[in-house]
Image (cartoon, rainbow, N blue to C red; front, side, top):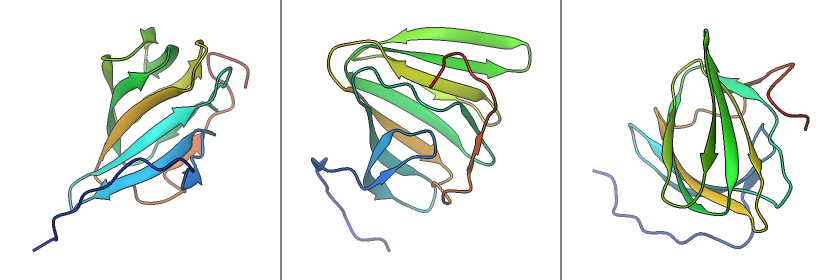
Amino acid sequence: MPAFESNSVKAAYDLLAPDGSEIRLLHSLAGASVVHCSLPVGGVSIPVTHRTVEEVWFFLRGDGQVWRKQGEREQVLDVKPGVSLTIPLGARFQFRNVGDVPLEFIIATTPPWPGEDEAVVLDAGRWEW
């Protein structure tokens, strides 16, 4: 039986994601993991796709845009606190901070994030990085 856990978002990030965003680890269980993600003012992530995981994002702070593309379907979504979105398996995506404070959001990943080989860097995205 897993232990009960609690955590707080740290000031320093734990690692840089393959897309260049700052990741602060929160929790992981058998079926999912959760992290806090931030992108500095003016930041643009590297476009990626995932090999095996899907994600749900919930925005806490800042203003940004998220590009998602899957097959012929493509969207640029304006994001701000209170907005949530999904990154389905195989979707290509990229995000950027268009505000004047760090863009911060929670990411729930299922199954749990398996490691740095999960993200595949794309040759092109929506924005220059």
